[in-house]
Image 1 (tube, rainbow, N blue to C red):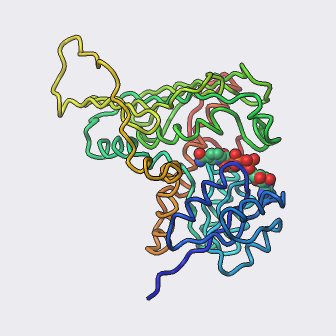
Image 2 (cartoon, rainbow, N blue to C red):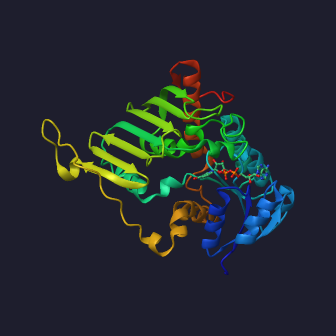
Length: 358
Ligand SMILES: NC(=O)c1ccc[n+]([C@@H]2O[C@H](COP(=O)([O-])OP(=O)(O)OC[C@H]3O[C@@H](n4cnc5c(N)ncnc54)[C@H](O)[C@@H]3O)[C@@H](O)[C@H]2O)c1
């Protein structure tokens, strides 16, 4: 049987759209059929570079029988609106992070994909970074033993002009929050993926360095269901932006991943118990030379995104759940919403949150 070619439509032709287009171009049995944006020139520009026909009318693009998968690359608070229409048209969905900005909207999208029998893959590309996969493997092998402490530190920088570059950026209505909802969500997902579900959150947020309505600093103390504790720090006020870090400690050892690469890797099963006063790690591991980068830097840039595209095609063919289905992507969203609720009320928040809470 000839291999099927999967047709893709990209809806929302802004900053992230070319990443999706590059993923599609790099997969032999994938083809970009349609680009959709409310701004015609944006759809046309993407189509001119990567192929496909440009649309401003979503329904017209969804009516194409050769479109199998719709990439939802619109502002975060419109993900469900677009994704539900795609699902209703029988198209599989690749949705950008965060899945949505409220649990109710996320649930609408999840339900629509289930009802119409299509797959929903939500982008959280850092799960496919080499260091993150290595950490997860060690976790599954039990090398951490009992998890006790997990921190995610996302100290990035966005200039005011970033927020001024799109009228949805930095708004409650469409960004759904600031440093944590938009940028921090990546490593909030890594943290919960490694540490498991969160039970309680106490948090503070601030808008310290930007003229925006949402936070540019978010700090939270987490209690995980397994009894471990953790710290979450997210910011877009830290000039010029530091590598994001995930620090996981169990009774069996510690691993730190920064910018997708292992920086600290210390396990008792390999190195034995330390002396009474420990033995402080001397420094961090150097960055691994990235093999693919030398040949094609653009390929490396999209490698982790691409892994999710390939996984979705396999999920369709094997009729299984994709690597990051909607239910999985809902978890970091719920944690972030709980951070906001704690910061707003001054209370410690217990999860799960009621749907309908912001
Ligand atoms: N995974 C990542 O690393 C990553 C990086 C950047 C952005 N994102 C996510 O991608 C999404 C888009 O972000 P961006 O930075 O590309 O935003 P953007 O503002 O650059 O692009 C959004 C585009 O959507 C279009 N649009 C708005 N409403 C529309 C509608 N109803 N129908 C069709 N098009 C519409 C806009 O005209 C714009 O071109 C966000 O959810 C963001 O969180 C993810």
